[in-house]
Length: 133
Image 1: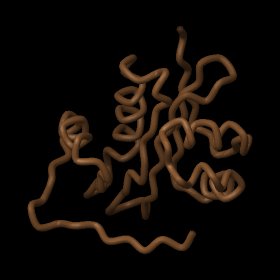
Image 2: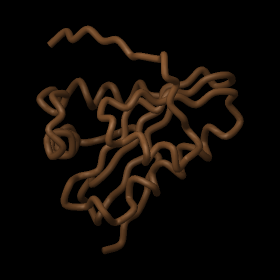
Image 3: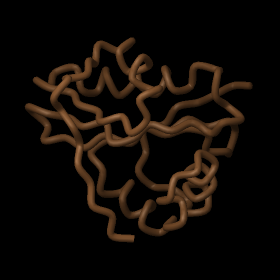
Image 4: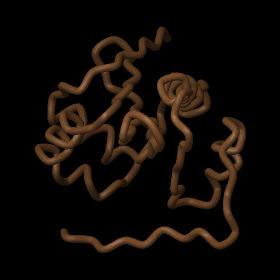
């Protein structure tokens, strides 16, 4: 398997739908919204196995002080091959000159993964959310 990484914002909605639903994320039910979201993102780095989208990381930033890694996902069939690390290394390089890089993991099991990249968890920092679905 040869994985290629691309920094692009134009995606086929079906590719996004398949990737997001492969990890059971609700947003996969809204592929056209995901397609527009990628176009409006600051940074999108994707992983491909041939013409199959197998992973993606998205960042939102102000270009100077803070960058948010909004999500990182890898198709379960491709997990364990260091694709997530490949995506993280690339976005961390893009954000190396920002003052702050933040991520709000929704699954506590992913915290050790993010710690490998120098991110750490504040004890009193909690994300809040309102869904409009």
